Structures are given as C-alpha cells and as structure tokens.
Image (cartoon, rainbow, N blue to C red):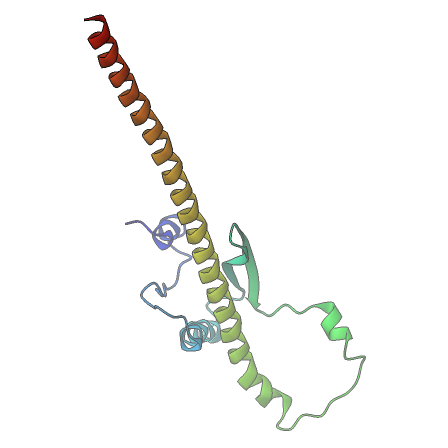
Amino acid sequence: RLCSSDLLRRQFPTQIVELVDLRSVRTLRFENAEMVAEKIIALFDKFEFDVCTLFYSRFRSVIAQIPTAQQIIPPVFDAKTADALGGAVYEFEPEAEDILHELLPRNLAVQILRALLENSASFYGAQMSAMDNATRNAGEMIRKQTLTYNRTRQAMITKELIEIISG
C-alpha cells in the first residue's frame, strides 16, 4: 500500500528529515502534538533548518477541504494584533524571556494539534461524503438492475403466452 509519505520520500529524498507516523493513533491528543513539537524544536536548536511550514487540510465543510500552508517557525503575526496594544508598555513577572521560553513550545504544540485535528476532520468529512455517494450510486444501480430484470422477465412471460396462444 502506497501512502503519501512514500510519494514525498521519492520526490524529495534529501529534504525529509524524519517521519512521524500517527496512523496507528486512534484519538489524537495534545501529547502527540507535543512530541512532534519537541522534535521540531530540537532540530531548530541544532540549526538544521530556518523555516518550518506546516501543511494540512483545513476543514471547511463535508465536501470541501482547503489545502493550507502555515509557517510556524519563525512565527508570523498579524499586523492588526501588534497594533492592538496601542504602544503600551508592560512589565512581566517572571521575565518576558522566561514566559516565552515556556509558552512558545506550547504554542507550537497547540498549532500542530490544531492542524492534526483539522486534517482528521477533513479526512472523515471526505470519507463520509464518499460513502454517501457510494451508497447513493449503489441504490441507483440496484434500481436500474431491478428494472432491467423485471422487463426481461415480463418479456419472457409475454413470449411464452404468445407461444401458448398461437400454438
């Protein structure tokens, strides 16, 4: 069975550093995302990359999923959010660096968990839509085959009646 990681490994063999396989995980939890975030942070601390982009399918509806690319390292912030502070100065307790040292890895894990959940919802939505279409198509095929069978049977009965009457 060929999966998307095999296709990516064939196309970009030097760019894939590690594969994290979560297909066996029945329920995605924060711990799964935290594990991935820790690996990303470890690679970033070793200066093995400078930009990390997360690709996933964002759930829009059962029949529509949006391919999404989100840069998570370095983080990209909206200009509106930065301007919302209005130039106010804040003092932090503990120091801002300590807070960021704690919050940034957690933020990264939360973004990864969101992407995993969005991707999972997209998968189940597409699967549900495909199964609904398959059920509808099977019902239509059964109706057509039943109609053909009934017409053929009626034609055979009519033919036998004509043979009996004319005989």
